[in-house]
Length: 232
Image 1 (cartoon, rainbow, N blue to C red):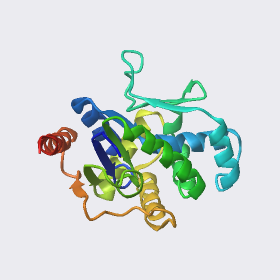
Image 2: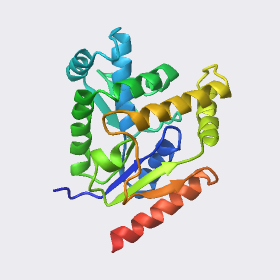
Image 3: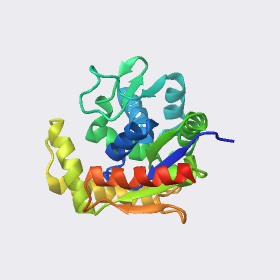
């Protein structure tokens, strides 16, 4: 039985889950857990080892032999725009996992049932003993089904693509907006049609469309809701 307050946030790619979750966690004094970073780190491991991303047993074996750690960024050294600090076998890979290739790889390894089982267990252990803001694409229905607050964060394809395009350009990745729009559509299709835990909205989730809202406005809305729930 969990003694923590759990905020579970899921939704499609580039809906603002990471930024909003990080700022919300800072405001509330909660631990921010970026589950997507775990899948990106797994993809990075496989890519570096030149293992086929669909080879489930080899990918899982590689992950189990590796040490994956995650923490809130420590200022001032890690105050470089990252949302979370990811340490893989002693190496800070916080930015290495944010490439387009790792993003595409994460979506591919996320369909592997054995791999998901390993990572979901770790995520549940993290959330069992401390207050968390956890975000990803299956958090409300698979990882934290009993969370006190479930949020499905979404936005239009166009606004999500614009955000992701800006992120790529900031990191020096040369990609067109049209390519990013197509990438977003393909990711949505994969996430909603995968055999294991397809992306969907749970009946008890609060649906928040961020297309026309500022990040600050969304954080304010959620923080007020959390305050109400914790006081009730």
